Image (tube, rainbow, N blue to C red; front, side, top):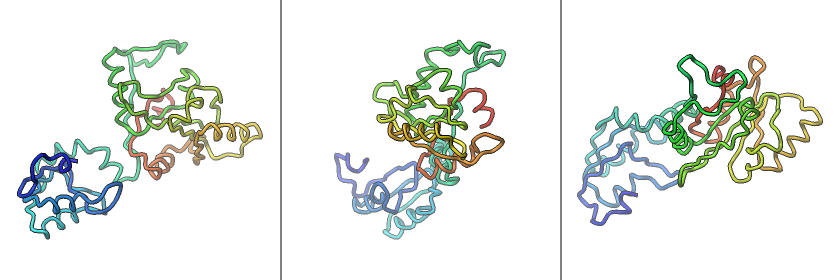
Length: 253
């Protein structure tokens, strides 16, 4: 993108990048090819790429082409920018951020559960930014049954995250907002591997018709095994998750 938007010739220029230029075909062609084709003289790199498909190969390709390469420039700062990518590429699991609001005496809701907000406007705006930033958003079935949320991003031009519901015993209502909007916003319901009853099988068929994806996950202590769920979500290419669960899911996580 930087090269594509140049107003002058890149020949002889120095290019600064936060991450080692890739040298393989993925969603886009290799960055190393673009750099070599445009005859940049020097490449200054912040972070090294831990991806085995790159991992030093990009640097070698550039040097072999006679381009000067400087590595580890502001590396700590650049590593901090790419924390989601580094975690995902090295563990194959999503990077998880837990979000919750708590009062000074350690409460997240009233006894009756009828409290709505204990945060201010700035905090709620930040939550929308987090929903836009991370690829997925996860809650437990208790939060869904209590709040019937949408879990969409409500900031201007924001991107809706993939909604993931942890529902061990398959209690999700067919008429909740999340199911009703699953055609527009990708939605996953994770349940324990179990022998479904006739009613549950019918519900599963209804959910699939409404474009809800059902994932069956092995159980751990009578709940979904979250480690195995994260492995499955990672295999689906979900690199990051905002955890907006209640006390039960947060405690399990």
